[in-house]
Length: 219
Image 1 (tube, one colour):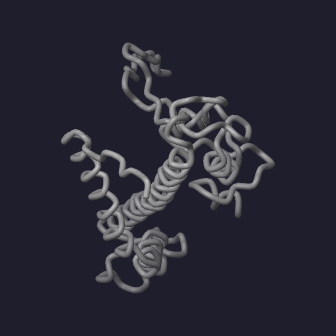
Image 2 (cartoon, helix red, strand yellow; image 1 turned 30 degrees about the vertical axis):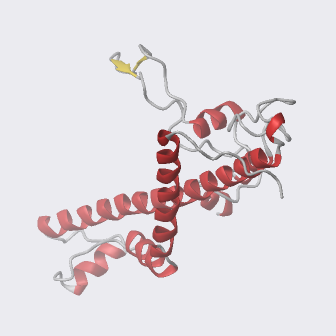
């Protein structure tokens, strides 16, 4: 039987491991709380304009068909507010979708990185025989400067501009004292803000099967 390795790690490291395992347990408990029924209900609410049920059916009909010129100011205000709420809800629902995709991608990256590092003999860990992935900076670059997981993720998002994509994925922020002049001549301080806050658009002609631009590609 081989000699048992010494696992007497510092207390701080053990606490960090306990925290990570706690996060994983939270993920296991949280994931089943999101199901098809909840997502379908939210999309239904977001895609159907909100109109107070106390209004006469004729008013609702006019509103839903683009009419409504005879609506009272109160009804028109409710209708406009309903559209605004629907748009806001749809944005929130889409953000939930992006959060789910990001969570899945992040967990996949963690699993792949762990599997790769554990596959390297202990006495060889730390040696970098090839350039690292331009995004995770851990796994070796295997395709177009990315590890397999990040290359697949990039392709599924429609192969967007590489620099924008890498900044988006790495969540890079503007350095201190970065400013931008607005069209009206005022100055905007960008220090500490994300360089690419939203997912870059797919490259024209490339298939997009994941992310916020998927629906537009399928239209």
